[in-house]
Length: 515
Figure 1 (tube, one colour):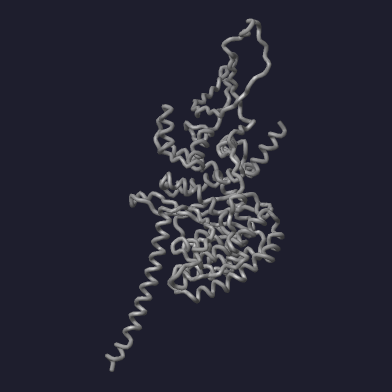
Figure 2: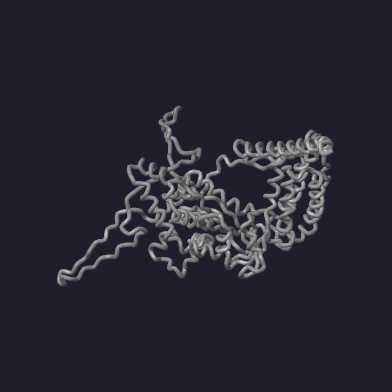
């Protein structure tokens, strides 16, 4: 009897085994495609218009035919409606100095009668030129004066303060080294090679010391910038790895740079755009909890689990409202579509595109106008999207990559729809992700920070430089002037607010207008 029961159940067991293997194979294939795209594919997440052939997919329900609502059909671009590209191929700014060269004809007499010629006009053309960096020595002479009648009376001007006691660099050179590394991503070993080309041979450790000293001078300004950003009612947050050399293990360990950003320009808010980075030894949630001890506003983040404790009611200072990033949810469907060609994923992307189209239209309006349009138009799309996702989830295998994308979206629904209720909140976290890119470029070129102190210097200097770039400032001009003011004592610690990038920019504009 037991043998008979076993034999009758064997086909069911084999069917279940084959089904499980197929699901696992599909999931692994999608994972391989995702990894291949990450290594060799394009970084853009733009989706090509959905073709009719895409909707003819066969197979399991994860790639079954799905009818896209007419409201959110992807728009096809026709050649006649495509905007004409514009390029700047010759406009030279008026503020640049002009080095004029006059080319006279070799013959200044009339070729017919040999009479004297007079000027009747000229042709002027301009070319963009460059003078290579000029490295010079600043020699400071301080004459001493004495009295012939009084032997002990000697008068001499005080020596000007230096950024490094007895050191070689001026504040301008320090700014150049720092900006080259943290704004234009030139690692210090390349800068030593460039200086060697001018006949100045310095060890890389010397430049490391210079960068550390510059960060020491700028630390009070960085602390003020941190306080200013975290005093805002709404802040973006993200983190990125920063390898740090561990001399005890002769290899690197992975620390983190936490990025906090504000940008009220999309809703005409009062806060100037700014970003600050804070160094941490690891990615544990306690670090972000320490950073945000006095913060209780809206924090726009990804779905990292370390943020969950911030939203608890028992948190000291009150619960933080978490707004999640719709771009992260969209990205999961994008990866599924790229890996499997799933029409369900394509339909989800089309629905996300309709949401983003509304956001593009209302960007730059007031928070009140934004929330009104979102309630009138975007909420309807979300009300349709949620049951549609739940229906698709019920039709497919729980192990399918598409199911994971759907569960992620439904699991973070409240945070993803926060922007519908608050006009200050953005639809995604791209504002802070853009501030991560300069860190990633610098990390790629420099490979690692030499120590934890180097990571802290990185946070200080990158914060000021990238905030200056957000305000369209020349980072070298800004940092050189700030360092000069702080080193010379022209700006005291109680007036350091004058050196915040947006305040400094306004001051420079006033001086230029007055001149």
